Image 1: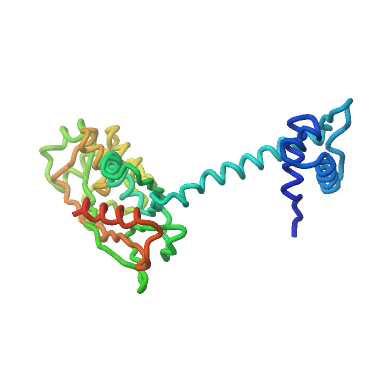
Image 2: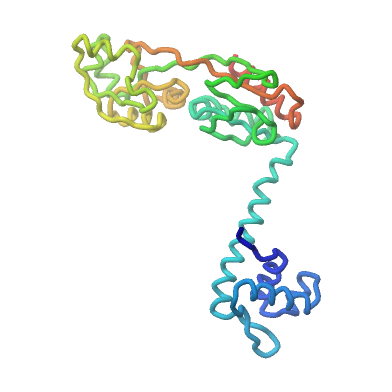
Length: 292
């Protein structure tokens, strides 16, 4: 098992290296000079080499000491920053929400301004892509997922299922507006998501019937699929959540002649035990109300 130097010795070393004096380091840390000297000696024994040399009434770092001082300063900064990062867990108005990328990108982020207006004091910690198997009320307060968590200690609320829709850039939409389905699929390249490699459940049968298509690109992120459609790269079939903002802003258009299909239901889940704070229930009820 690896041995680490005492934290107090690292603090003494950092202060002495920064101030150039054991005496001033002792004053800053509210210790005696002999205590600082003892802790520096411990650290030098741990590293196996001298870290300071005496110069007049002060001290300067050796070459090894200069290198180690940078390491210690970085480590102490990381520890301090880490403490700042977890402050929110003690915030009575914070909520840790774990959800799918589709829901975060297409539904939640466009509503953040409205959320801030309605609930200005609540801080949402958003985790995307992680699929928890349980809700322990320490790591996560609310979960939104296509995969329900079962158990007597989980309360599940079914949210409306998202729909996959066909989109493309404005120029492509203008060229294809009068082309019927399924012939329209042969008139422009298809943009494929790795999450839906068949593009649509009905496309393999159409291809077996003789429909010729051109696969332009396969992408592992639906946000990039939407961006490629916006750049006139072809026809994309994506969850409406992902395309909603681009559709509303006119950056892409629907190809209404191409049939969409429903995805699996989405579940909002929380623990049946008392929430970590009152804000969890407020955000839970706000999501349910907004979805309905």
